[in-house]
Every structure is written in C-alpha cells, then in structure tokens.
Length: 492
Ligand SMILES: *[C@@H]1O[C@H](CO)[C@@H](O)[C@H](O)[C@H]1NC(C)=O
Image 1 (tube, rainbow, N blue to C red):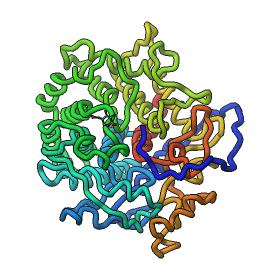
Image 2: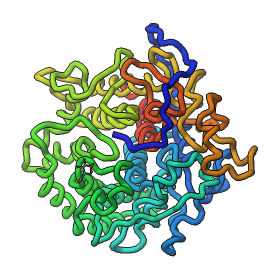
Image 3: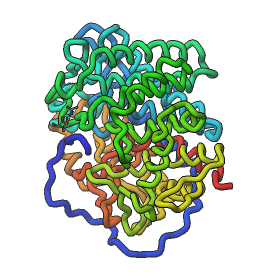
Image 4: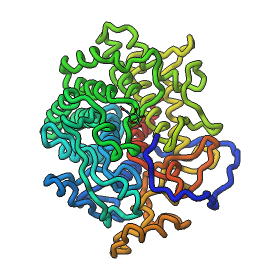
C-alpha cells in the first residue's frame, strides 16, 4: 500500500551492480551511528522555518505561508517522503513511532536522546497547530495533484497550498485518532524533559480523541480524491480510535480510556491476528502496546492475552501461522511498494515485545513450539542488518551509511541542486531534467532508508522507481528506537 507518486515510468534500465548470490558477511554494524543518521534524515524532511541548530544545511526554509489561505499558522511539520505535501495521517503515525521509540528505548539512546526528542517535537509542534481550533483537525497542506506534477525543491515550491480539514460535518476519525495517539505518545517523551509541553500535548490529545470519537467517519468520504489514492484509509478508523485510547491510557492511567478500549476492542479483534503494522493498520501495535496490562490482569477477555503472541507467530518464518514472506537474502516482504516500511515497523514491534517478554519472564508459543524472546530479537536484528548491508547486493539501504548505498533516491530536495549552490528559482517543470537524469543526487539525504529491493533481493538505483527508491518518514521512524535497542546488545 503506497500512495501514488509522480512517475514517468519508462523501462527501467540503469547500470547497476549485478546480483551475485554471495555469502552474506556478518555485520558488526555501528547501530549508534545508524541511529544518529536516522535522526539526521528527519532534519532533512523538515518543513517550515529551520532553526539555527539545523545540521542538514543543504535544506532551507520552506512553506512559510502554509495556513495563510485560511488565516492560521500551519508552518512546520514534515514532508512525508520525496515530495512537498504535508500529510498529517502518516506524519502523525511517524511521530507516534518516534515517540514510542523514545518511551521504550530512550535509555539506550545516549547523546542521540536529545535529537530524538527534537524529532518528536518537530512533528508534535505541527500537530498542535493543526488541532488548535476545537472541533477541527487540519489534515493536509498542499494540493497533492499539483505537487506531484512538479519536480521542485521545497524551498521553491509554488504550487497550491490548499489546507484540507475534517470537522463534525466531514469527519476523519482515522487521521484525528492517529493525531491524538501522536500527541499522547509525545507527552510521555516530554514528561520529564519539559513537563509544561507534555501537559499541553496530553490535554490536546484528549480533546482531539473526543472529537474523533464523537464525530465518527473516514476522511475517505469527507475529503475524497484529495486523500485517496495518496494516504487512503483502507482498513477503517476503529483501530486508530483504540490506538489513541491505548496511548492516552498509557500516558495518563485514566480508567475511562482503558474502559473505552476494553469496551470496543471487539470491533477490531478478529479471530486471527493481522500480521501488519503501519500508517494505516494499528491492530498489532495496539496488542503489543497493551500486553503488559493484559498480563497484569487488566481484562476479563481471556482471548486478548494471546493476541500479541499471535502477532509474533505471524512474523516467524518457522511458524505454522506465518503471514509474511522472506526473500532468499532474508528480508521480510509484504505486498505493495515501499516494502521497507514493513521490515522496520514490524521489527520494531518484535523488539518491543521481546523486551516485554524478557521483563515478564515469558516465552511465546507458536504452533505448540516455545519461542524465546531472544528469537524475536534475532529476527528484528536480521532485518536491521539486512538494511545496513548484510544482503546479497552487499549494499546499505540507508543513505550515507557504509560504502555503498542508494545514489538516486526519489526525492525532490536531494536530487535538485541545493539553494546554496543554485540560489535561482527552479520552476515546476524546470526540475524535470534533474528527475530524469542518470547522475547521482547532488545532496545526500543522510540516514534516509529507501523503499528497498524486490523479492529477489534486487535493487534498481533508479529515481523513476519510487516504490524502491523513495524514502519516507514512516520507514525511518521505527528504526530510531530499534537501532537504540540493538546498540546495547539486547541479547545479553
Ligand atoms: C477508503 O477508500 C478505499 C479505496 O477506495 C477503500 O478500499 C476503503 O475501504 C475506504 N475506507 C473506508 C474506511 O471507507
């Protein structure tokens, strides 16, 4: 599942390294370095007025008038991927995952902890602006058709910056629910470091949740072609409402939210676990998030106890209930483009669950076989190591990590000359030659993880193939916590 991108898809022929079924070297990866780089990527995705502390200096201020059309301030936030639209649905999910990484693994982040908090704040600051008006959530800035029709730097962007909004007349419980989840998870990140900010985040989160719950509906219906097929809500909004309630309960301990969760979880509690977790599907995340409370006896529904374990069993290649596939080189696969989002977000859940199981001294059972938490760690680590270079092509899929990594990522800012070296305006269609060029991108978007190789472990380093070469915030967001976890040898 991936939104539609600008694509002049021609037969893709590009000189690239031939696939050789070589033995894969055993990593020895510098996870702390990859963590630092992952956080730099979020600086490269910033929209708005860049601060003095900005380290990705080939980027400049952009979209400084977002919101002007309706007389409000919507400056800031993240571009989701290689384009210049601000989509709150994936932006909020990325913020939630960044925050979850800090909540769970912040203690292992060392000097990157401060940067990780700043990455959360860049998202949550925008989400506060987008929800400042009670009864409304501004869910997208920028006409996606006009934007995708251009190959322009964010700093030059001159396409229509329409603000798309949900309210009681045209609701959007999925995007509002995810926004509430992000604000609640963010409040946990700042509860010690900036209590006033944390309090602002959780108050807003509860108000937004209330709005999302009272005005139920999908933004598919209220915003139509402005959101579909970009970040269409495929699987409904029930999961986001429960996800938000779970996060608010985690942040506040308020019984109301737990009761809401337990009273409504049957709406998403299928007789089988869905082996999926991403910007559209929160089911597995909910079950992993609430697992400690379920174990502690927080529910009379006995079935819930096994759900997180069932999720794990859908991931393990040796499990009889496995729902994902693995390439010969070992990368997890699900249908659709931008596969790496599945590898990172599902591995993140495995790491969180492994940690929980270790703390509770429990194992998982898949088809009668006991699975130790260390097996979950091993699987998550294998995915991260694949991404960082232990794969048949022996290349890193993180820009700027290792000796060999993608050079032609599908990303407007990275592929066009920097405003530092080319201050003149490059208009909408004037960017096309840069898009079509076979040359490497001039600006390294350090830390960006691309959509990744195909099922045959083959990667085409080709800008015109966004399913493989485009980075996104929701590929990187789960990596932040995951890399922190791996950087301290969690198996010991
Ligand atoms: C949103 O639209 C997509 C594509 O048309 C559809 O598959 C999906 O079921 C819709 N979701 C909701 C919640 O209506």
